[in-house]
Image (tube, rainbow, N blue to C red; front, side, top):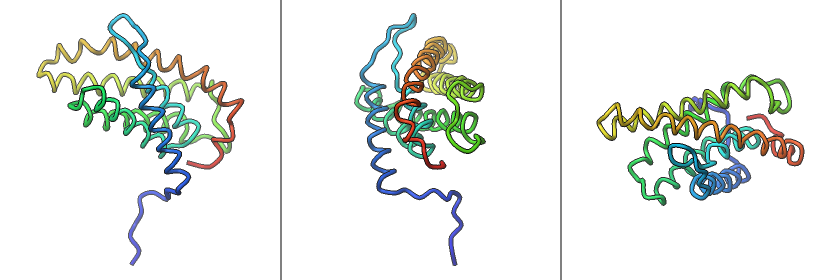
Length: 182
C-alpha cells in the first residue's frame, strides 16, 4: 500500500545544497548587518528570505528562512527565541509565497506586481504580529510585547525596501535561478 503524500515535492541533492547555501545567506544577512532605525536596529534577513522564496523556490525558502534565522538567534545569544523564530519565519515565508507566487501564470512572477507587494507587506505583518505575541507571552506583559511592534514594523519596511533593488538586479542577471515549478 502506498502512503499518501501531502506534497509532491522531492528533495534533490541540488535543491538540498542550494537550501543549505541559502540558509547561510539568511543567517549572515540576519546576523551581520545592523541598520539603525528609530527603535533599535534592523537586519536584512527577511529580505534574504523573500529573495530565496522568489528566486529559488518555496521549499528552499522555507527551510533557509527558518534555519538561517534560528541559527542567528542561537549564535546571537537569544536561544529562547529559536522556537518562536522557526514558527514565525515559516509563516512569514509561506504567507509571501501563497500571496505573491502561488497562482502565478507560467514563467516568472513580476517583481513590481501588486501581488508581490501585498505578499511582502502581509508577510511582514505576520512577522511583526508573531514576535509581538511571543514577546508578550515571554515577558508576561502585553505592554512589553506591544512596545516592540513599531520597531518590528520598521524592520519589515526596511526589508521590503531592500528586496526590490536586489530582486530587480537578480531578475535581470540571474533569472535562470527561477526556472522550475515550486
